[in-house]
Image 1 (cartoon, rainbow, N blue to C red):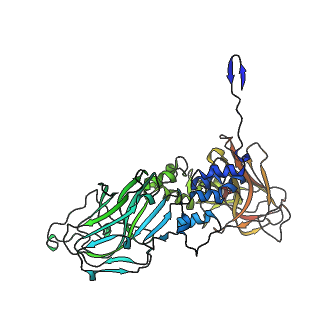
Image 2: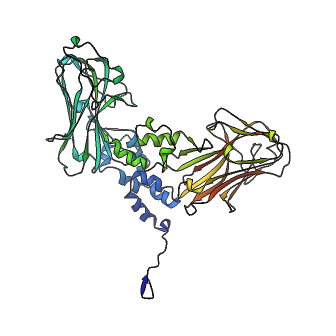
Image 3: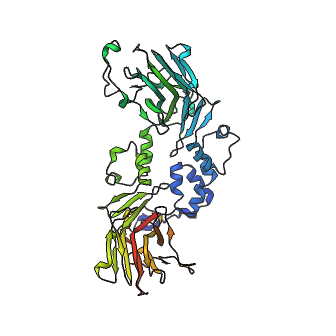
Length: 507
């Protein structure tokens, strides 16, 4: 601290977090979340070592998790164990419950099996059976063939749930013959035992299967569903589910019980065939949306033309992770790295400068199967060429290591096996990162010279260079170039799709 003209001035410096001891970085990351740990692993090699450690991932596992894991299962790391608990629900309490972790937050989720529920109905015992069915998490599920009314209740100790978490409960079932289920809705409720709780109303027959029958066949006029009445939704596992209600666990009542109920006691007509798998208690979509939206880029709404077709922010993220969208009039392709959420791009051949020897007819634009863009460039009979593409650095993710790749195909190609192409990636006005590559492989490449690699989309790629975006230059441009100007021999039939810029995870 220095004194100048009677005033105190504090001299501040920058702190290099990577210079902290590994144990200190590990401790800091253990106080974050699984999502944050994955993102921090991309900062540097030191952060990657800390974020992958057992000390970090052990902090995300529930207490006494050892008692949940069967002795027949073994895992090489705590992270592998964590991911297994997210993807493969475990049967607990003698197979009466199923337990798993929500991947993004590590919050606990459960399904109560039908054996763990109280199921009371009007049907005689021979109309209710326990059966095994494909796709169920449990050995047995309840099958009710005929009934006039039923009451289902399930309870779970609040202490088993994650604190400060918004949960929703879902009745998970299947319907075989849709007998009478379209006439009267089921009353659903979720709440702490002894309180009124959160209420819902739902038909158990899917809306598309619902038919109106003449009122004299059911004894009274069939009710018309209101706006507040749900219909079942199909799950990816082939079952149906209806939302029963919601509950926010403030961790104020550790010794209470959460009760979920489903009642249909008013209709009085015979209905069936229902198969109940259980009641699922998982994080509310609103809570999940908050977490997944934090991984989405700013103004993601402008990038996706059909937002209404997605039911959650997670669906949007996964779609952007697996299905690149075209932006800027189709001149660029954009997607997210599925693991880190970092922004990636491909510049189409329409979006960069292509200079070559020869008249205009020596370059054509064609459509080809498997390309991301409507048109790609074909170089025909050229002696030399120069390709340059640019992208604003502000469009890239901060604190991210990128590599750029020239993506192309060869068709009756000739001449490219004699001289390598000079490749470069760097901020405009700087020297940048350099590479050298042959675009057509022959034999073994010399030292420091690449050959192209095949991609899963059946195109070829060569690495052009790399760039670390420190977010220090927001208004600059990143330039990628490919030059072959020395050979002067005829070469051709090179199909250029574009330049791909993708985030790289540190080793």
